[in-house]
Length: 328
Figure 1 (cartoon, rainbow, N blue to C red):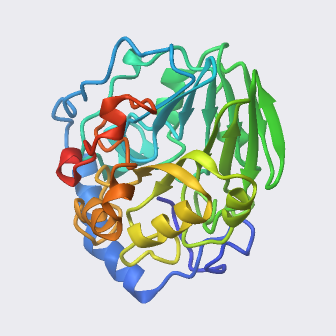
Figure 2: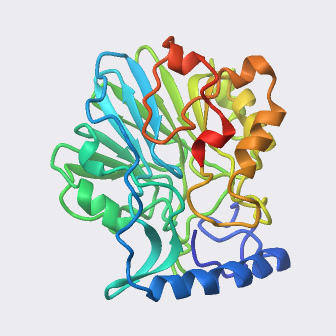
């Protein structure tokens, strides 16, 4: 979610500029955002009930993962905990005084107090539904490092142990993790005036495992090289907010194409059900993904229940607990 001005190219080729703002996209915004802005002015109703979560996270496995809503995931890699695009607010957007003007949350919120101590936060880009300043303030700790896209470090609140911008094809290390940034098919501007901001996907690697966190992307060949380089154990792709924003977000079928190209063994679908950012029904993305997969592939889909930790080889990870209706 960002303010768009209709400039730039569909592939994000204009640096941080927005993709083409189509007439269909304009109609979509006109239908949804007035209602959301009106809701923003109403008093809070106590917020959404917290998702169950797992207060005692399993730190024994060399790799595990949980979906926490939208593009927020919790990863256990080696001996470190990683959090992607953390958003724990009940509304995302521009904050003016006591009000946040933007889109309201449709799924339960996991209480960040339930999280284990976080070693690394990955920020893919500056859009409000991925870089949520109130959530980051709650997570600020001298223990935690933040890796983010070029031109976005100034948006990260104070209090972290370090904030590092990684450019496309750049690489850094945090503990025993190696993080490499890729260029997705998206854009990074947060408002009409900051088109210099970039947008990243990340490959996170330990000596034993590799994970791809795509962030936001439309269909792209950027992940083909990941597959040629040996693939990944887990790929995390967005499958929602494509109608009529397919020039900026992948359909479930396109996300599956990129997952396969990246050589992903397990797939965690994200960016669905949480915020109403487009015209497709909130439950459509998971149903479309289910229809596009073979039975064997469906058994490799994980993390459709908010706050449920998955570990490779466990019954709950390998069984088809990934029911499209489970995310409602």
